[in-house]
Amino acid sequence: MTAVLIRAAWALSVTVAGMAAASTPAAEPAPTSGPSAPAASSRSSTPSGAPTGTGASNASGAADASSASTYGPQLEGFTYPHPLQRFRFTSQQQPLEMAYMDVPAQGRANGRVAVLLHGKNFCGATWESTIQALSHAGFRVIAPDQIGFCASSKPRGYQFSFQQLAANTHALLQSLKVTRATIVGHSIGGMLSLRYALQYPQSVEQLVAVNPIGLEDWQALGVPYATVDTLYQGELKTSFDSIKAYQQRYYYHGNWKPEYSRWVSMLAGLYAGPGRDTFAWNQAQTSEMMFTQPVVHELDRLQVKTTLIIGQKDRTAPGATRASAELQKALGDYPTLGRRAAQAIPGATLVELPERGHSPQVEAPEEFNTALLRVLQ
Picture 1 (cartoon, rainbow, N blue to C red):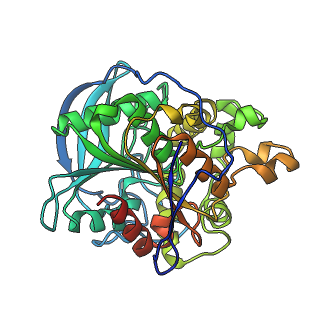
Picture 2: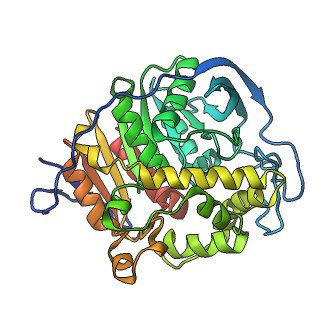
């Protein structure tokens, strides 16, 4: 099985090489069917966020980075870089709403749609620079917040699965009359993008997974299981400082820039706000989902044009702290994981960013956007 490797340097000069020399196993097959799409009811435009508590962001979308920031249950008080709209629908016998940005092409429209799927510790707003780059390149850009996250509904009783989140996303796109799109997913959104492409291959023009979570099966490797109740107790302890420490270690390989604090504040403000308990519960549910619903064994079933963009300094491995010290050292080896995944996915392209970590779109927006636009040509 052949893949293409593009190793992007600081100046973004690239070399192309075959991946045949890498010795990694192929993934196992799995079905591509998923749950029925949720019943849609309506869409509406809403302001990007009315001030709630402290730390409301300014007109440019730059949030107060103070650890004292608090936001409402649906991130009220945090201003998104573009107007938010609401997709109202019914799922699992309850009314929900999915927040999303729908940004038209600012340059000469190319007729293509890019859908950006955020990670667990991120929101659609975190794609700000990428939205701008894609829009100016002629793309219509849709960036949703998944159910349980950010500005979307946070149902206390919801059976989270990647199949369900994919179905919700598909229903949103259907409501917007989008039949085919380029899907770009980061972190847990990268894992979701892989599931979406397996579930709705006919709706995917191109797939780009950016440092996706789930390129290894932690449970199969021996990481102990944690119940949702246990994970919830851990989530309740989350603070600005704990988020920053985690991201500095795993996302930015020990480095920190003041601009990263904006995104930490966004997340910490939900944990500190009036919707704290339900948000923490949803976060625990999605952490359990991520651990128990691996997609890595299904990579060889992908039928769409796929690119992996991998920051080589990423060492993210959810649940690794529950593993033995020896196993911890082996987890989250993204250089190896990316190459193994590229071998498993038919015809995949692998773009390696040698100096970047888990969130290259935040760490080095210009470098990332240049790399992304090259693979979307």
